[in-house]
Every structure is written in C-alpha cells, then in structure tokens.
Image (tube, rainbow, N blue to C red; front, top):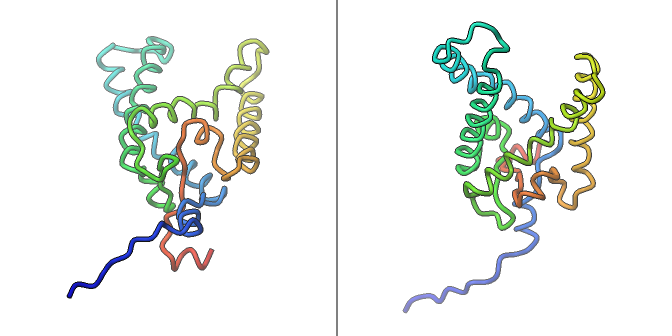
Length: 182
C-alpha cells in the first residue's frame, strides 16, 4: 500500500517571508561593494579600447569609451542578474528575482539596468544647464543617492523604485542562523 500524498497550496505567510526585501543598510552596503568591483570590470575593456583607438588624451574618443563601458556594464549585470546574483549580492545574501519569485530573464534584466541609471542621471543632467562645479555635482549626487535609497521606504514592499518598475525584487537569502542574529 502506498501512502497518499496531499499537496496543499503554499502558505502565503511563508511565501511573503521568503520574498522579504533585505534591509536598506545591507542593500546599500552591497551597492557600494558592487561599485568597487565595477572598477575591475571596466578597466580591461577601457585599456583595450585605448590601445585599439590609439587614445593619447582622456577626452579623445570619450563618447566611444562611454558607449563601450555602458555596453560592458549591461552585459555584466544582465549575465549575473539572470543567474540571480552578482558577487556582492552573494556576499550580502541578496538575490534578484521577478515578481513571481522566478529567475529574471534577459529583457527584464536589461530593463532593470536601464532604470538603475536613475541613481545617477538626475544629478548628471543638472550639470550642464546650471554649470555646476565638480564639488556641487558631488554634493548633489550624494544627496540624490541618499534620497533615492530612502524613497524605497515609501514603496509597498520596501523595494527600490527601479525594481518595482522593472518587475524585479531583491530578496533576502540569509541562512536562518544569520537571520536570527540580525
């Protein structure tokens, strides 16, 4: 006689807990770590670009270099986000999924990449018309980053707004022992 197996619908409370957003502090620490590692991601393509184009001055071919770096970053983030995590996300136990909790596909990862530029574009767009100095742009940039991060508090699931618009979620994947200590 084989025992009968009953399948019940997943408990919504368990599903909500497993889709919980990491703390803002952890997400921002991951963001800073990611920014540090990106130097290594862009330096080699930048070096190769400079050698291939025989660039001798920083302003020579800068638009081509910017386009290359934009593309390299799109490939980097698209690849790792479709796998669920970048190295900093693994370190901070953060995973990216879609709204249903499934792995993100390339179109959604690229949409998130484009929307993530909202971390930087508003202050950068203010540079030219207002002729801001480097110091003023730095202050504006830091202020905007803090404001953009804090705006996630007003989002229903505490996700960043670009995640909500892209249909992605950052979820907490800490081991249970670590979760109890937090």
